[in-house]
Image (cartoon, rainbow, N blue to C red; front, side, top):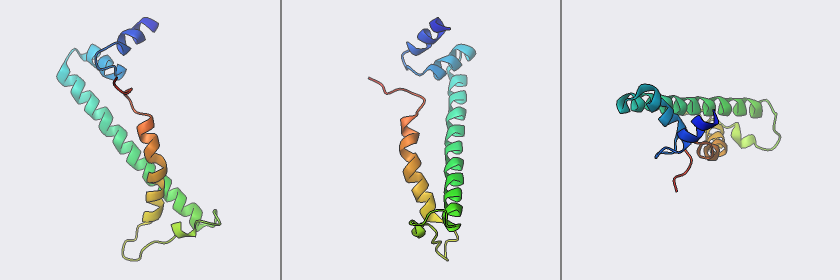
Length: 107
């Protein structure tokens, strides 16, 4: 197992999952399709998690779970969307999205 991991991490792209897909399919086109599918699904999951977190945050604040941030409860009548909790969730989660990427930084 250690040898497999060292071979995968010593590839030119240094992205283990891409090399694993390429070793399994032996095709650049299939590797690109699988990788694009995985990245698309990860992005969709990030969006749904932010939507869920902002909805829970808004419900918690609306139910007086927090005493201070009452500005999060305000929903503009023309929007029907609690935009402030959405932006608060994005502000909190956006740095973590870039901290845990699939690929290490290239040197």
